[in-house]
Image: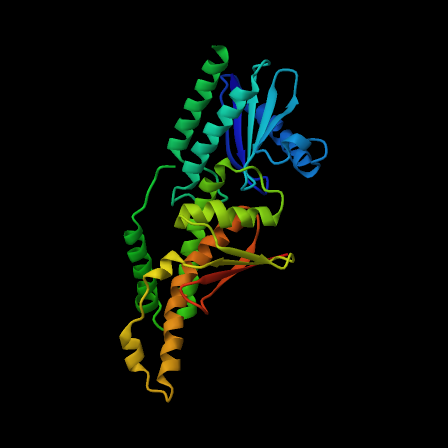
Length: 143
Length: 175
């Protein structure tokens, strides 16, 4: 199950942050997202370590914690997507597919002429679409 | 992505934008009108590049981003690629389109020629024609600047129309 999803702008400014848990651990998840930004920077600025993924948008597993796995994705426009999941055996293809759909939703949201670039995404349609994608991710990996 | 835009509609819209800004909103301030038109282009380029770059591998340097503009982005906009790309490898790029679509159907208003009463009317008319054509180029300049700045490359873009219908865009990347 995906517990948190975040869109972070090119100056590491949060554009969208949503957690999908019942319990009151939003702050902890936000902290995890925050920490993962350093890992993203490291991956991008030290290409030697991750030579095969040099020019890929999908950054793969950023780091595992005890209960979560954190995945990252960096678009050409320097926007980062961070995804935190509780599933410990996730297939890479599922995550890639998830990020592709998420990216498409993001592009549609920022193509809205009323959206101000660099500001938080407040579109309700985007929020609904994201939660649909998040829910279907759980189904895919379960089945 | 399967979405299409009527070319004639877009061309008419562009002409109307330019004429309403130049003769309506900012009659005596062509540089202000130019800035406004460029800003519209900037937003278009900014949002369009987001969509076009979705399936691209990440760009590692400026040249790759410029190549993306020349090939994929230009194809998306004009169904053709940039014909010639020159660079001095120091942050200046010249993108030449031998037949720029948005200028292909442009004709010069004959009243501009008639109104000039200087000794050398042809030079004056040519100047005015160039000026009018130049106004139509702020929009594509803005598109290029918007696309590049969204890809993380702040730059200045200007256009050159010394040999129509070829058109070249000069991109200077800000250090």
